[in-house]
Amino acid sequence: MTAKTDRLFFVDAMRAWAILMMLQGHFIDGLLDPVFRDAGNTTYNIWLYFRGITAPVFFTVSGFIFTYLLIRVPQSGMENPRVAKGIRRGIQLLLIGYLLRMNLGGLFKGEIYDSFYLVDVLHCIGLSILGLIGVYVPTAKKKSYVFPTVLVIITLVLFLFERVYKDWSFAFLPDFLANYFTKANGSVFTIIPWFGYTTIGAFISVLFTRFKNYRHLYPAAISIALAVGYLLIYQSSNFFEIVYERTGFNFLKQLLTNNYLFIRLGDVFVVFAVFMILRRLMTNKTVLKIGASTLSIYVIHFVILYGSLTGLGLYRFFHHSLSPEIVVPGALAFMITCTWLSLQYNKYELGIKTQISSGLAFIKTQAIELKELSIPVLREVFIRVRIFLRRIFRTVRS
Image (cartoon, rainbow, N blue to C red; front, top):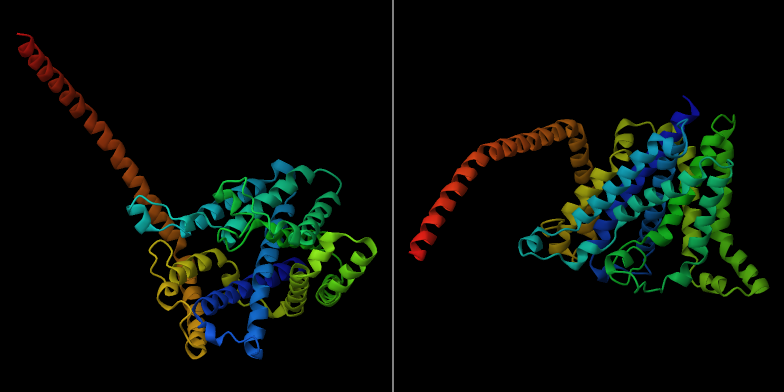
């Protein structure tokens, strides 16, 4: 088994784990009664902590996989076929993100609700992919260290100054654009600072690609990931405090009030290490299929839980109303249902797309035929109307 194959297996397994964590996290957070959200409960705190790891892992893995596919081909810059594919994928994710926030009831009334313009995970990942392309294209043909260096700088800038720009309102932008940068209007995610996790994932991918033939790749990668994870989780705040005391930089003082971005990044490195350690157990076909089906799983979960398009989701009927005895097995059932539906969709995806394409082609053909048939009829009607109007006007003149 080659290192390349192992690497893709463990990353796909990470993505599968992250999407399943997201499913149960959204379900429990959305439906659990607030009276059971006890900060003094150890079980609840453990769940809450691991739920906080999900999004950083998902964004980091997304950056890793996209960049791995981007830089493995021999072409570079705009000649790289993955650039065009990435642009299409990024735009697709943005469109699906907006589609999921559309409400058919509002459309029938001729209204688009404000929630349509809010930004969520799909928007940010789609824009992040476009952002990675925007970094890759101008640096691809420069020195080999330029691309990964720019990626690390972006992550550091976004994470170090998060407390500075977090309170900016971006009022100079239209709301639908400002929603990408601020949560003030209700956006769940914003491109900053979350793009920072995507760029660090891209950086890790570059390292894996460049050292793919190194004999001790995984022992070295696991050791480094565990060391970096430990330092970020337990020592980063102390480090920033020392630097602040010596420099007096105010942004570091603000950072120390909540150093969650670097701590969560440490969690991501630990998760990478764990999955690399268990990489030989990550070849289960179902796990890999789940990892490759995250988009369809996300769409299905959004429809069932939040009632995308119809507004008739579980969130509407059971919002913050269930006890742990119901919500925990419910979350398990929700995970299984969404995953099963996604895998069933993927099984028949080609046939479904073929039927849709055939249906659209049939409609197009019928429309063209109808147009061709209607032109003579419309021409005859136009002539008769014109003759009729002429007779009327002649009568009036007489």
